[in-house]
Image (cartoon, rainbow, N blue to C red; front, side, top):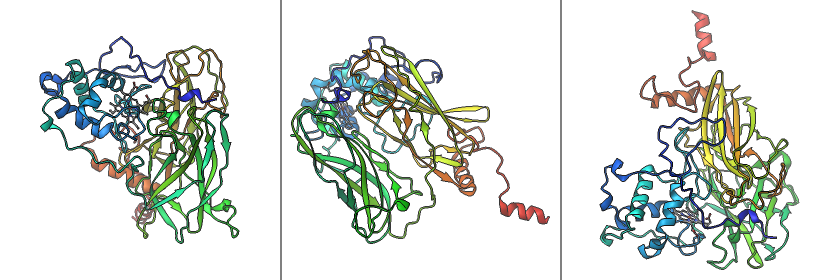
Length: 495
Ligand code: HEC
């Protein structure tokens, strides 16, 4: 049976209650989700006259930057948003889907809550308050076209399968997998893919995409209708002499591929190694039938390399392990349910990415750092199980957490019929691998820092701050006195 998880109803009803913009509103993690669902703004607050707002001048540039990558012929989205004629019939729907900014169903699919925490992420396609104001005003004033001479030049698209990370240095291909139109899910190992590398290379960015024979336009209304690979966890390592397996001691884990997930851009100081004579091991693939037709697909892995003489400054991924699958207890028919998980950092740690992973009942996840008496809410993001997104911090905004920090995640769940991703709101559910069971994990990853690296990263942050009153949410010790380093101790001993 086709996974109901992806049968996301296209028509989303925006609540009638219009809430005030959340700018400046205090927000607490505790209790049920107090975050507003709709963000409405006035263009006058941005010094713009409502009567001047047109498609050509104001809306087209927004659509080019944040929407047309998907909303173009062959882009995978249900309709094209290239021309005024394409866009006009969708004006009200565009207003609704963008105003819910970080809630399930929001467009573009990137659910960062912007009223608290760290706001600087790599490849953030989300709309600013001003852009939301422009879309809202334009829609409410009859969606005028304006002067076509004001239009920005149209974007040139390379084709259906453009890489968002740029042209890769190496593209690897999985074997073909076929699923019937309707059938059970398939989960398992789909083998090795030799890299053909004759020397070690460090990877700067990796993107995984599915190439399949679903006709353009078919299945566009749901993400699950366009793809058969639900997810793939994979690793790499050096091939044995027979080329039949990889040596476990050399195994390197890569971030997961999931349908709808964005590419991985590793921090500049933490390239990931792809060894000479290595292979990818596609260890766990979850495939599902798309409900449309028998479909054959393969995955392509696009890698961008660092220069050959590159050596990473940060050696190890930190072991964070933040989640709890055992104690999940999801009641039927209830909104505002919460789950909590904690872990203690054993090393100084820089968080690279936050990647909430819940299943269909999930609507939101927050991550906070507890250091001494302080609780820092690092981020809260909405969650839509049709789009499993990761949030990759800008290198100079990523949390810098001392060892001993307690990390805490809070998952928010809604099992009422208002959650369009749910198959059935009447069932109790626990934890498990299947889509009808639940998960509660931060799949994001982090790097370990030595004392010197930790101090030097914090010194860079301090240098970028205007004064002692400036504050970095992810850096609890940024203004703490710098402890004497080994060399400093020796010197002071001599005095
Ligand atoms: C990453 C790809 C992607 C991006 C970027 C994206 N969309 Fe979408 N959009 C989709 C897909 C796929 C669907 C259908 C599934 C869904 O609703 O989640 C959709 C659905 C929609 C719908 C609802 C269509 C309907 O049938 O009711 C609207 C409106 C929309 N998008 C507008 C936008 C706007 C406006 C932007 C930019 C601000 C945008 N989208 C960015 C992929 C995308």
